[in-house]
Image 1 (cartoon, rainbow, N blue to C red):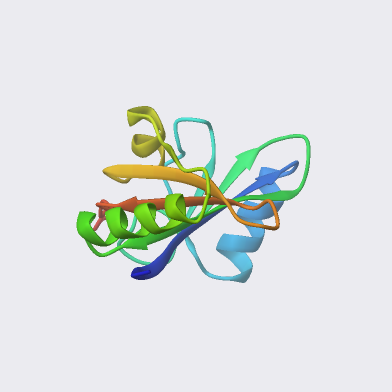
Image 2: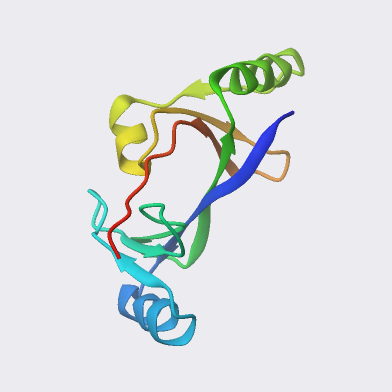
Length: 127
């Protein structure tokens, strides 16, 4: 597989304000514009976010977004996963837009964690 990077992590939180204080005041991350779902988006670099915090009823891990360098590398990985019997679903256009990527697929690892496989990350150079 040719994963190029961990693109982002999504968590659910009962207290978005606590995450904002932790991310911005303690870790020194930047706060980006909120996501379409009301999520807090914490920035580290030129990406729209690296940590997304969605409001919810539990404090839990939601998903990890794994970036691929190009569509061919993603396609090869999808074929490998499907060949191993892993169910892979295409994300909707709205899913991709919410994650600020061009193409998105979903799978679940053996421990039940949601994996989001993508190409075409967008950039935001605003300070």
